[in-house]
Image (tube, rainbow, N blue to C red):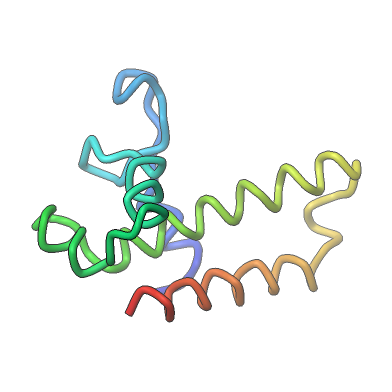
Length: 103
């Protein structure tokens, strides 16, 4: 699945979970899923617990977090997003590395 398709799996609606980013069609926040992973849950355990989720949903959470981190960094530098092709591609390489760790 392409990065843009993955990021489309994350939605923000002020009426759902107080506007926190969530996995589309769920009330599971990106923050919650990443917190589970950070505290030792495996992707398999999360998928077992939340039957409607897919590996793509978990990868989308990582990618969303990485994209947000990247955007924060370039906004501090005052640099244009479109002028950073190497950094953008490395962002997606990094997201793919996280995906490999989750397998």
